[in-house]
Every structure is written in structure tokens, then in C-alpha cells.
Length: 472
Image: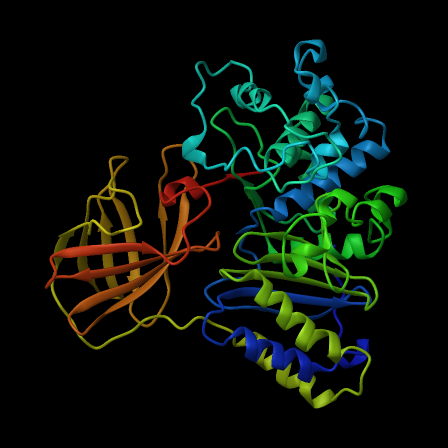
């Protein structure tokens, strides 16, 4: 069920603070895609920077961990998973695993206190071992089992992907369903049947720690559920004791050398912060929970400095709560939120077709051997050569146009693009609209090269096709 709507003034929030927040978000260096704010369980502000939109999913990266942790809390409350049982008791013969792993529990995994003193798996899809046979057991588990904890489980904390991956596999083993099936039934359907996708391993296993692509309303609903003590629309999602415990940082995490809000510890897949707590994902995906203010915030973006976004929230949002408000600012905020957009590229110069080889300095892999640009009635068409087949991209001049790229594993990749000739160089932005990421294209006939670079390289690696995800 959608969240009821209200106005900032009606809920005790000064819209002038939210307008100042938008001003700050639109300064150079910020690539915001969406924001939603709720107070007292009512939606008071929502906006998407076009071409991003309300019904679009968006790669949440490690915010996926908070969805996985929510499912785990539900299953623990129903007695289907024991948080304090050895994690490998669900996955393997415990007697056959190294002693340190035998002491590692499901709770250690969801709190990232598995015993590793550093992340032992810098996961990228291309680094994943291909299965020797489709029906073989999860070969990643064998690789993980070889990485024996070098510290005592529970006593040391290190941000890692291994722990939540193991939790996702425990959920699948204990229930016979992948974690995404539980996310769909437990969260997304009650949230209003919202669309979602997920990246998976070569053997079709959910990652748990990353890869979920969800809408901003789903992120806000998750934050609101935790703000309300694990309850959504009167229905309990996770047990009250788990909801109270999960946000609390573990002592081990408080001993880390992280800085800023990240220095305030990590609980059951939630971060502590100066105000309340949050789930977050790389490049600026946030589910912010502010119990003292009774506020929930969802943000998606393409930013490098995630602390800066939090600093702006503390600077502009927090002081605007429970102060004298200006009702006229509510209307101005509504107009501003409705008109948010990333301006498409445009230009007056027109040229014919051009084919250029990929510049050696490009971020995008060598498999993207060349680029061909052709004029079209509504802008241009960019053809990228690739062994998997030619990738066709419609590029609007003064508008955003959408295309879909096929990927080797089946799902299509949505790309929204605009571009134009400027000073003899064709520049375009190819926004992978269901992710935080953008490919910056420069076709330079004078240099004889096509420069294909990421604004921020995805964690799945430089091949854009690796970001594709499966609906669930």
C-alpha cells in the first residue's frame, strides 16, 4: 500500500530547509537521482531527476544487505533460522570445515564479525568462477571455505561481502527459496507490488550483499518499516526484539578505523550515524532512519563522496524539523520537486556518419572495439561493436532517448542517452538508467578515436553488460 501523503508544514517540517537541501544537491559534484522524505509515516517530499523516474528500479549495491537482514529477522522470529547456530551447519558438514569456521555463526555473518580482519573477497562478477557443471553445488562456497578467518569470530570486524553472501545461502538452504523470493513476499508485495531485479551468480544464486535493483519507494518503505520498529502498515515484518537490536553497532565495529559517520559502527547490516542509523550502498544509495525526528529518507544517486550527502542532510534537513515553517514554501518545494532533471546534451552542429576505434585509454573493455555514429531524425544512433553483438543506442539531441542492450546472460540493459557535436567532438552521456552509472562518450575524428569512459566504474567491473539483472 502506498504511503499516505501530506505536506511539510502539516508534519512540522520547514520546506525552506528541503529547498536548501535541493540547492546543495544540485551543486557541481553531486549526481542525485531521487529523494523521498517521510515524517510521522506520511510522504512529504518526493522527486526524481529526469530521466530517472518513480517506477524505475535502481541498483542499490550494499543497501541490498539491509533487505537481506530484514528477511533474516523475519525467518529468525519464525524459528526457521537460528542466528546463533554455526553458519556452515546450514551449508556443509560442520565436522569437515576448519575450526575457526565452526565458531562462526549466522549472526557473525550478518554483523560482519566473521573473524576476517580484512575483506577477503573483493567481488566482481568477472572474478566469479564459472561452474564446472550447471547442476554442481555452489562453487563459491568452496572458495569461501578456503578463506579461513584469521581472527576470532565476534571479536573482530571488517566490512566484507562473504558474511552476507553466506546469509543469503543459509536463507535459501533453510527455506528452499532464494532471498529475493522472501524480499518479494515479505516486503515488496506489502509495499505495493513494486518491481525489482537482482544480479545473480553464474549458478543462479542470489548475492544477498549487493545486486538488488529496487525503486525509491521500496527503499523509503524499508526505512519506514524500521523507523516503526519493524512494522509496515500495522503488520509486523520483523520481531520487536530483532528490530531493536539490529541497528545497534557491535563493539567490534566501533573499534574500526573508519572516518565520519562510518566510524559510528555497524549492526545487523545497518550503519550507525550522527542521527539515527541507515542502510547504504556504493555511489550514494541510502535508507536513512531518524527515530528522534520520526523521519525516513530514501536517496539514490551517482556520487563518489557519500559522506558529503550525509553532511548535507544533517546541515539542511535536521534543522528544518519542528521549527517555524512557511506554508508558501510547501508549494515552491512541490514545484521544484516536479521539475528536477539532468539536462540532456544538445547542439546545433550536424555531421554525417563516423566510425572510430576505441581509444586505448578507455575504461570500457577492449571488447568494445569501435563506435559508429549515424545521424537520425531525433538525434543520433550509436553502434558499439562487441563480440556478443552490435549494441544499438538511440541518442537524443536535447532530449533523453531509451534503448535496450542485449546481454550474454539474457536480461536486457536499459540505456538512456543524449548527445551532440560540440567543437568537432561528439559528446554523449549513456546513463545505465537502472544503475548509478554513466558512460561518457567522446567521438573525436581529429584524434581518430572513440573515448568510452565511466563517470564512476561499477563495482561489477568495467564491462557495462555485467550490470544486468533478473526480474524477481
